[in-house]
Amino acid sequence: MPASRCPQGHDIRAATDRDGQGYCLRCRAERARQRRVSNSMKLTLIRAFEDAGVRFEDDDGSPVAPAEVVRQLAAVYEADAP
Ligand SMILES: [Zn+2]
Image 1 (cartoon, protein in one colour):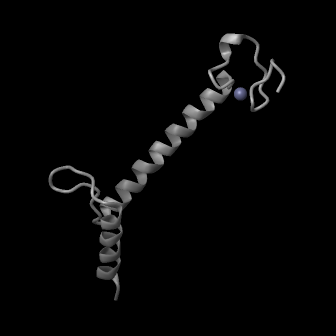
Image 2 (cartoon, helix red, strand yellow; image 1 turned 180 degrees about the horizontal axis):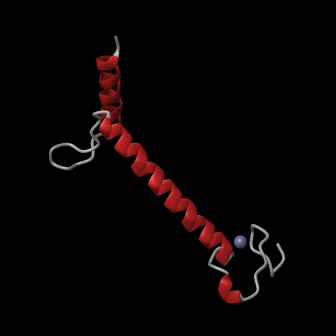
């Protein structure tokens, strides 16, 4: 990889643009954007599940086990079955 490019091939004009792994400002901005999209996707999914009656936290506010979430989902679909 040329010294003036990051691993994604973006031009790097100043050494201060490069982070510890050699990625540039554009890479960092893109990663931050993907994290925001991914976080908003997770919230949307959780809300959709909760609207369907699936709980991700018990009465103490502790997260329920993934297997329990699946069991709840199965119960929701069973209840909707004709
Ligand atoms: Zn880059």
